[in-house]
Image (cartoon, rainbow, N blue to C red; front, top):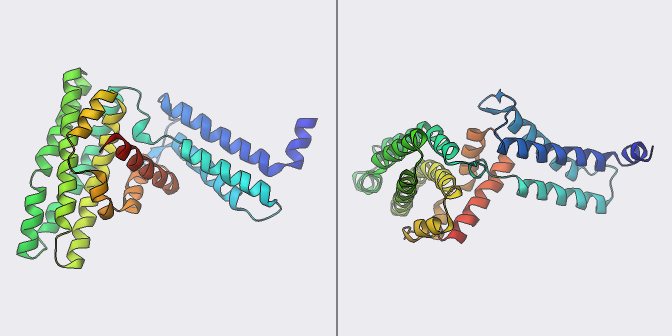
Length: 275
């Protein structure tokens, strides 16, 4: 009876507990590869987790019939739950799952690169030359990475993993260099347009980098970082976190608020690792 009385007397706290439980269970099941089917471009499990997270956030912000102390506690729990939600690209527990996710990203990556190529044709000759030179290796580098991921799926070896580690860092450095070169475009409208197209590539490459990093040893990550002379801090002013969050949310079928936190989480962890 005390349990029922507590639920009746503290409905918001009880509801918050249920939502937290849903998010927690969804996260555990997701890590075990359980999806409960598909919903649009994502999974039913991801949808349930995102809805529970959103409702928890709304509950924490609800000004009605709740004390300031209770509201603050609910807000804190909402933030904790969001921060504890693992990024989709970091939940893979095996190299095979990582390789499959890289393959899944490949069509979007190739499309983003094609958009960069198209953007260059609309620029003044001098600006077009800057971008064409900076992005000329995008296609070859992305195709090789996709080929390596498929090869790893067929035959997961340490040698193929080392190749993917090297290749994703090379592609990431090409993207970082292109961002710095795009910043040199004189026309501000053209500059912003090109930066937006390169940002689309940067988001996917960052997601793939995080995937590969998640199955790499500390020594391997340190080696990868050492091969990255253009650091994240140098290109951060040219990155569009909101655009990145929209891409991540759409690809993984999750909420935009969750994706924003995950983008910031990746940037923090990448900088700490030396990228």
